[in-house]
Image (cartoon, rainbow, N blue to C red; front, side):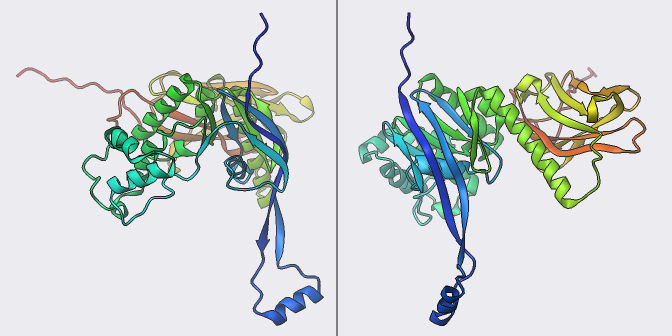
Length: 396
């Protein structure tokens, strides 16, 4: 039986986008005439996207990933119709709702209740619609006690919860989301994830820009990888996450070279880092396996030592294991295995150092070579790690 061809929801064809960045304001007509006479432009052209093409099918949960400054958010705003491309064409088949900046349209002088109705109207709901949804919106945002307070008295987290709770009610064909997984506390992020899973089960067309590769791997059917304004390609979620990790490694190497730190000799290089076979979302108290792909200059066998440093989202060094006393060699794959990860829920980065066997020479040192997220079933944990201790009481 021939499979029915998928219908396109969004077609991006040969799209390029650039912006004019002013150098400085001309102080008057005289200065403007001087600039014209000397053929001096008061601006420079910033090329953000260059000849990008791909198709998003109906029912896709489509990721767009890339490093900061790669052009992801600009691409999202082009798809949403906020920007117009300099070249190329974008076709959107169906209604589209962008959640690019949660809370746009909120009025700080109005109460939370008034802002619910205002924001609902902006995404196309009638007053009657909002009245029927109001209770669910407030309950999801966990703001029952605060709805009659002015929004200017809300914390940023409270505003985000309210905005997201309204936004997910939109019934459009295509939802466009930019980094919404990065806002709110851990418990609220879990609720957001549950919403996205439900939307995926409903086969809604979702476009998500994020740096969270675990979300890409869990949610997305495909993902586009953007780098420096160019489309590298559209891949399966695990392949996109792997390429993103490699881009992080290459960027770290470039920064080291630019600062002329002299840290890395290049005898051994890091070819890639994989967390749990590409699924960088780890449950607390379960296993974590880190695989390092090592390469040697000229392919020769080199004995070495490896050091790892785990950092939380606030830059606190959680642990720093190393391989001293164990013989490792390059080229090849090296694994570090943790049977039960004790870290509490949160986002973590991994720094990798590769050294000569006697630690006298640094072959490679890469900060933030990989990222992963830890989650847990219980949300009452405090601090940095779970001690896995047990309470007991002796009878008198």
